[in-house]
Amino acid sequence: MAMGVVLLTFLSGTILPMTNTQIGFAVSAQALAGALSQPFFGLRADRTGGRNLGGPGVAWVAAMFSLALLLAVVTHNYVLMLIPFVLQGLGSGAFHPVGALHAAESDRRRSASNMSYFFLAGQIGLAVGPTLAGLLLDVANLDALALYVRLPGLPDLTAYRATILPVLLLALLAIPPVLWLIRSIPVRQPAASATPAGSAAAPARAFPVLPFTILALMVALRALSQPGSVNFIPALFQAKGWTPAEYGFITGMFWLAAGIAGVICGYLADRYDQRAIITWTMVASAPAFYLLPVVDGVPALVLAIAAGGLSGGTHSLLVVLAQQLIPRSKGFASGAILGYIFATGALGSLIIGSISDRIGLEATFHLVAVTAVISGLMGLLLPKTAPRS
Image 1: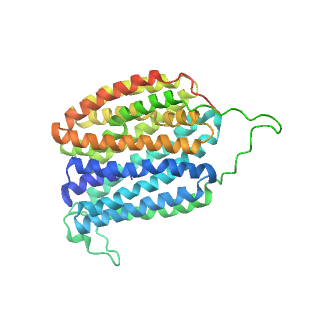
Image 2: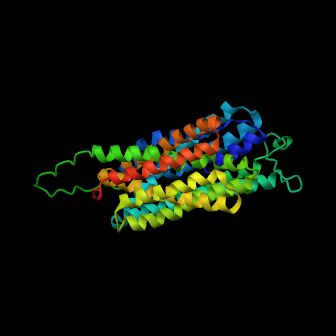
């Protein structure tokens, strides 16, 4: 899924012309499909552990990814390509609540740290995906080094000026992990009642409306910087003359920085005030976002790493906060907050795409920097110590 924005940027310039608004809509609709489905998959994971969701979810992503690429190349039709591209999101919606549930419950004393390791693994995939896609597209589309593959039953895709076949073949790598997930994800047993026989049941905890409202507003504003803006880093640097390998690499480093910073933030959050970590990392990311569109070369890479790490490092903390607020249904809490993060990120991508078509990407990234500051300051309104199970 992380290759999507690089591939859309490449397709837009070679095979299937698209505006920034169309790219933003495709990414947004895909994320919304996953976001809206995650709470429902999370409820299912609470009951079963999610073995029947995790592996099939990854398989669904690989299948829809391949179909979207084939339709883009064969039909040159944006709408036909868009349908399977969007449907990828359902696979993400099935997988994430399952992973977050088991990450949190593996050691409840270190839930923030363990959640950060889960998201670090995901961020590594988000980093490798754009980088690998860019490298393969570069190699496959150099006349001297072009390596075209003919598969039985498929049309001759080499008739086109550009090819995406090496990237298409990567979907086959999903087969072994899918089989392993289907076999290895723990089956969740029904939780034993914590109430001793003959004693009165503990009163249900009231839903924390105010903390959730603050959290929701903060995440909505954060969405423009993380993850909304990253989908336009390829377009930003393609306009500067960077190759697919170069803008794929800088996009990957943005994601990888978020994962590494997430481990550091998770370690700190298990020991110190979570809201302070969320606030100051978001505020510190603003200068990097503001300067990113006006620099080039190595300084741009450094700023992308800073922007990704500082804005994305608190991703796992937001999930842990939601789980602490609804401790009796962590699968649902994970699905709800992840779905909301992805949904607001999707809308952020759509907003950024629409605004950038009017005022340009440079001015749009300046607006992103402002929202990062506001989002960070809202973290100070969160409870200092979130309730724990």
